[in-house]
Length: 73
Image 1: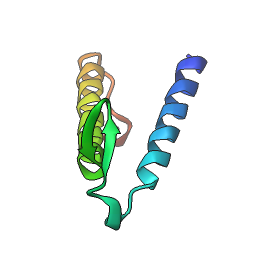
Image 2: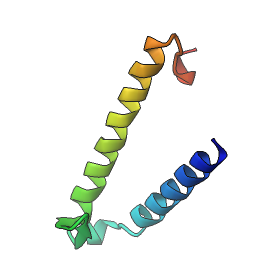
Image 3: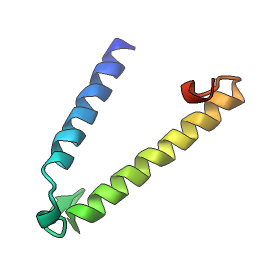
Image 4: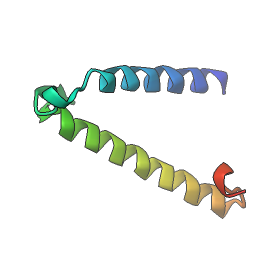
């Protein structure tokens, strides 16, 4: 478990640093995003959407096992 948590923290740290490089003036700058030529803005929206899909899956899984998310306890 500790290794998984450490890997997740490192991954989110990398994501936070990468998103921190985005400014209002470079939103349309093209970047390599998993081999695709996307704007920074498109990559950010796609990433946030993807993370929320995982959150929804975790909430559904938790609730099916009688575990409520912390914010609804």
